[in-house]
Length: 267
Image 1 (cartoon, rainbow, N blue to C red):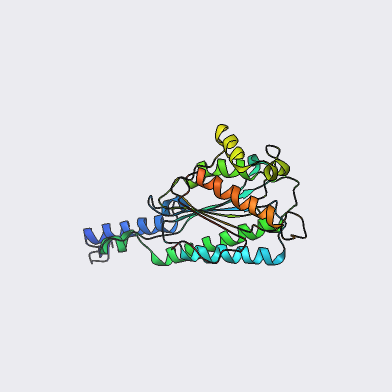
Image 2 (cartoon, rainbow, N blue to C red; image 1 turned 90 degrees about the vertical axis):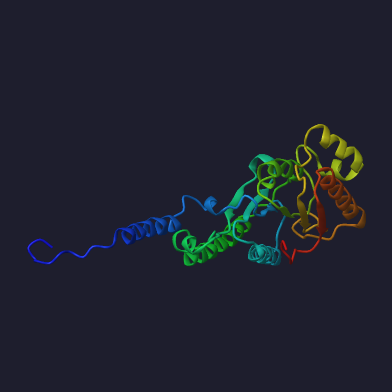
C-alpha cells in the first residue's frame, strides 16, 4: 500500500487467472443461458401426452403424477422430458413442460474444477422434478370435460414437433384413446373398418412420425363419461386393434397398450 513501506501482496499471475476463470465458470454454471444447455444430443427424448378431455378421478390424478415422477427418476443427465396435452382440437394442444435433466460433463480434473458444480446440478435436478410434477398437477386440477377429443391429429402433429428430437425416443400416452373429433366422429371411429381408416389417414398425412420410437399407451378400457364405466368387449377390441395398427403404420419400434397406469420407466 502507498506509504506503508511494504510491498502489496499480489497473487501469482497464473493463480489470479485461475481465480478469475473459476468465478466466471461458476457464474455460468449457476446461471445457464437456458435449461437447454443441459440437453445431450444423444440423450433420451421422453414425451408424455396427457388427454385433458378424459374425466380423471382423484385416484387417476394421483397415480398419473406419481407415475410421471417415478419415470423422471430413471432419466439420466442430458435426457429431455416434454409434457403435451390432447384437447378438443389439435390446435389447442399445450406444452406444459420442456426440460432437460441437469448433467455435468467432467472429463478430467480441470473440467471438474471449471465446468461442473455438482451442488448446482443436484439443486437444478430437484427443481425440475418439482416443476414437472407441479405443471402436471396444476393442469389436471383445471380439467374441464370436453365433448370432443382430437387424438389422431394431435399425435400426428406433436410427433413431428417433439418425438423426432434427441437419441432414444419414448412416448407415453395417457388417454381412453376414443377418437371423437370434428375430423373423425366417435361413430365413424367405431363403425369403420380399421384398414379403411388407416388408408384414409395415410392419404391425408395424418399418421404420426414415430420411426424407431417406443410407444406406451395406458388408460384404455373405460368410456369417456364421468362414471368411467368399463367398455364392452367389442368396443375395447376396436380401440386396441385400431391403435396398434395406427402405431405400426407410423413406424413405431415397439407398442404397449394397457388399461393400467404405467409403473415402469425407460431402462
